[in-house]
Every structure is written in structure tokens, then in C-alpha cells.
Amino acid sequence: MPTDARNSNLGAAWLDLSEAWNTLANRGKFAMRRRKAIPMKFMRVGVATFAGLLLASGLATAQSMATGANSAPVAAFTLVAPNGLSPSGLVARAIVDRGNGCPFLNVTNIKGEMQSVEMRERSAPATTGAAFSAFTSCSAHIPVGAKTAQVGSTFIPAAMPSKVRKLAIFGDTGCRVKANLAQQCGDANSWPLAKISSSIAKDKPDLIVFTGDFFYREAACASTLIAQCAGSPAPVQGMPFNDTAYAWAADVFTPMSPIFSTAPILVTRGNHEACNRGGNGYFIYMDPRDGSQNTCAPYTGPDGALTVPANDLNQSYASDVSIDAKHTLRFVVVDSAYGDDCNVSSIYDTQRARYLAAANLAKKQNSWLIVHRPIVGWQVNDDCSPTGGWVSSDQSAASAGLLGNYQILVSSHVHVVEAINIPGIPGQLVIGNGGTLLDPVLGAISTTSGPSTPQITYGAPTSSWMSSQFGYVIGIPKSSTQWDLQMRNPAGATFALCALKSKNIACSNK
Image (cartoon, rainbow, N blue to C red):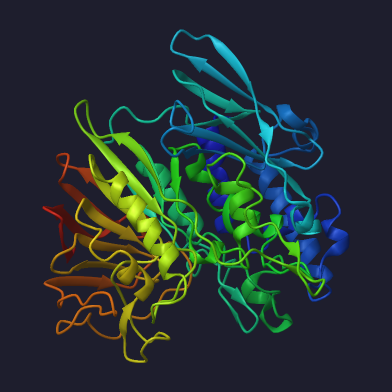
């Protein structure tokens, strides 16, 4: 079965399945370690249902699971690399069952000649213990000139686009599970990430930008909420972080599988990928840089307990993509995993250094800033103000005076979609509607005042637009500096149209 068809079937299967993670939990030793809060009946039903759907779709068999490097991996995808890391601009990543070993990346060039590239393990830190013992993460630079790329039986994007005709953008996607709150993880309308992924795949973008916050399964599913969170994989007790291999499979690898064969993905780290949250999985599985998998590795603190590294931010980097034969678009990525939405915090000096480096990267190219927390974002009924207010104070302060080289500021973090024009800076696009619980829209964005910090006070917005519905963005370039931005719902229907021109975003509901 062609890979596109397999991925499409997997996306469809997920939509009707409330306990898909249990199949993954049945692998290895995890079934013996599952929490008592998950009734056995959910384990039996989940495994039987998911296995049946997989077999019916031709997605997996016992034989393919046992053949290691020649079988379909748990997930395989292509990441956009920082400039200078990989000559092709791309990194191949494969997630395989522990014990299978890393497969080869098989590529063919335009002449049909095949090359096998050894994929190397991104070893999970030993101090993550059982949390990441189920899968092995494997990585390789994709060679220049590749026409096709294949990991086991799975094809992945082999080359950067020579011309971007269509760009997909989305973020804040995981299923929200907290101690006293659970999203309807098994309901495709309440948690529509699989629908969104399938729709993006059908749109066939040339490149995908992910704006951060993959991981939201941060607590054990309460016994009173099992029907909602579908027995979600729980954090491992005793670890100073929340994520596990199985939770990443449930939150990312399975529901996002339709996009993995579609286009290269440029990923951004969100605050949910901080080291005390989902950071270990992010660096083991999703970060494109070589050797970064130990970034969040826990260590033994002075009190003898495991702890995670203190707040730190990755170095800023740039990735270039061709818009046409004459023009290049540069994505400049800034890490904002740590910080304060309401006040300028102790992270300010480090964050300022990251924006200074980013501004230098943006000097000679048509550039978009990609950062998880908005420079200017509006949130209703949040921790900063019960009636609504500007968020991401750290970002507003740390980036002050350093935004002039960007065409647009692209973020998520606030769980709505927004377009805001503030005097003196490029338009801000907030895309936080990728699947996790939405924020309410109870009122309009302020028209009387802009964000204010001790470092800078912005004027009131000249225009703004906001909507609280799930979806993603499709960007279509009209020239090197002008874009149509289509706001689409999980089914792929356009619900609003935006235009980017002269660093200004104008949006209207369709």
C-alpha cells in the first residue's frame, strides 16, 4: 500500500478510536508498569480495537513489527535543519521499537541510483529511566540531490522545495490532560489533531511550520475522567518531568502521522517542551540538531533527588527556503520555552541575547520570526488579567528594538488565532488553535493601549482580528513579500482570509 494511503488510513483510524495508545502500551514492558488507575477493561478494549483497525487498514502486522529495520517504524519524518547543519537542509528522523536497532535511510537520486545512509541513535539519557525505554530515536542527514527517501517501508520527504507554492502553519496541538481536567482525547471533534493533520496532508503543502507545544499529557488520567482522556499514558513516578515515549506516541506520532510523508517540518520548541514538562521527548525525538538529545537530561541534585536543568534557551538559528528562483525566505527561530507572560522575569537577559542573535540572522534576507510565545498577544480571562490582557511580557521586553528586519511575527501559545498590527513592528500572527483546549473569546482585543514593559511601551493596535476555533493556516505567496493566509478548520474549509502586505496583516471572516 502506498505510504500516503497508509498515512491517510491511520489518520482516519485514529478519528474513531478512543484508546489508541494502549496498543503502544502493550509493547515491551510497559503493560506491566501501567498505573492501577487504568482499569483492565480499557486495556483489553483499546488493544483489541486499535489492533483490528491497524490490521484492517494494512498498517501493521505481527510480521512487520518483528522485522526491525525493514519494517515500518513507529514514526518517520523529515525535519528542516538549521543552516549549516545538513548540506541538504534536512534531517531524517525515525522512531523505532526498542531492540530493533536503527534502520538505514535509503535514498535515490534523479538518476535512480540508490544510497544507504546509516541512521545513528539519539540515545535517551540514562536518567530518564523507564520513561523513554520503549522506543529508539534515529537520525541522519539527508544527502544533497535525493529524489526519494525511505526508512524501512516508509517514505519521507527527500528534499527542500525548490519553490514554495503552499505553506502550512499550526501549533499547540496536544490533548490537554491535567490532574483535575481532561480534554476528550478520544473524540475527534473535541481533540481534532488527527483531522487537522489529515486536512494538511490533503492540502499538500511544500513546507510545514510547527509553532510549538506538542505535548499536553502532563498528569495521570484521574479515575473519574477515564472516559474523557481515554486512559492517557501517565508520567513515570519519581521523574522530574511529565513526558514518556508512549505519551509522545499518543500526543504526536499517531495523530500527526498523515503529515509526516507530506513535507519537511520546521519545528519550534514551546513552553510545554520545557525540561520539567515535555522537554526530554522534544530533544530526543523532534529537535533537528545533532547531539541535543541530552539537553533536558535529569541529574542528581544536592539533595540526592533527580532534577532537570535550570531554565535555559537554545541558541537562535535560521533556515532558508526558496520562494522562487530569485527569492529566499528565511525562517529565524527563537526559543521561548521559559519566561513569564505577565511580567518581565529573570530570563530576560538570556532571552534578550537570543533576540540579538536572531536580529543579526535576519539582516540580509526576507525573514519571518518564528517564536512560540507571541511578541504581542492578547488573551481573555488569563493569569495576567481576569478581563483580558497582553501576554508574553518577556518577549515584548527582550525583543524591543530588534524586530525591524522581519516581515511577520509568527507564534502560537495563546489558544486562539489572532492577527494584530501594532505601530512600529511587523504584524503578529498567533496560531494556537491546533487541537488543544481553546481559550474563550469573550471580548475584543484592546483598541486603547498596547503592550507595556519597563523596556518598551507600544501604541494601541491599528487593527486586530481574533477567532476561537480549531484549525491551521495555509499560506500562499503572491510575491516574495506578499502572502495570502487562509485560516482553515479541521475539515480543511476556509473560515477567514488574511493578507500579509508591507508587514501588515489584514483579516476578515469568510
